[in-house]
Length: 139
Image 1 (cartoon, rainbow, N blue to C red):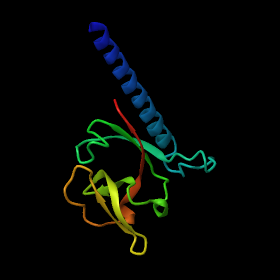
Image 2 (spheres, rainbow, N blue to C red):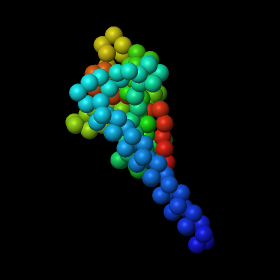
Image 3 (cartoon, helix red, strand yellow):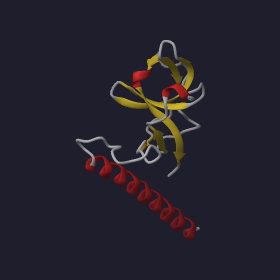
């Protein structure tokens, strides 16, 4: 039992160290590119399009739990989104991750819903879209 606890702690520490390292690389890269196009000198396949974010809250349980880390693709085009995708958008100064329930390309709006919520969010415009969640990591 003691060995399992030690193993769990070591694996957790390794996971946290890895995520910290990935975030440090992301922020260092952004800092080095401040004042100029962050994608300068990169091919389209090398563009920095993703960021990692720690989840707070339970609105997306059980698919995404509080304390999970999500990888968000900021370059995922809004015109490729479909019903059921989980996206990140801005609301009241925060980043929110919810599932698309309806998308209207004519009016450039969508309706989202947290899997654990009873009612849908109000209709949001495409300009509040940040990116699509492409990976959920458990720490």
